Image (cartoon, rainbow, N blue to C red; front, top):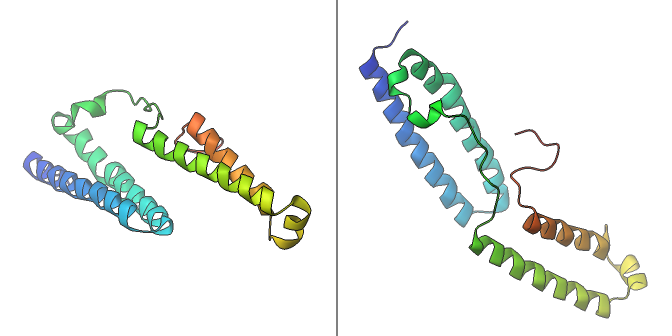
Length: 149
């Protein structure tokens, strides 16, 4: 089956509108819902956008290259993973406060006692998580080392 160009343009316009609302819905979920919701919905959004591109838009653009957005003809360059000033400030404030909290914990709950009283990895595990966040602040990234894009 083939599709005529006006129909192809209508499909592309409909998917563009849906994709814009998809992005907006993810932004709203990020602001209003828990991290679990964001994680699950973010993956679902990625699937919708990826499948829409691969399964529908790419074949249409192949059939009608004149309706393909110009930016799709340019080679992909991964953007710099730098954080915004607002994000950097929020992370810095958090890390500073977390370090103060750890100092308080270490003063009020000596290591020997904390190992008996606290569960799982205790204070060292919390310290490692803060160090990992500090590393993220110093070296922003879109994925962890070894993780596929």
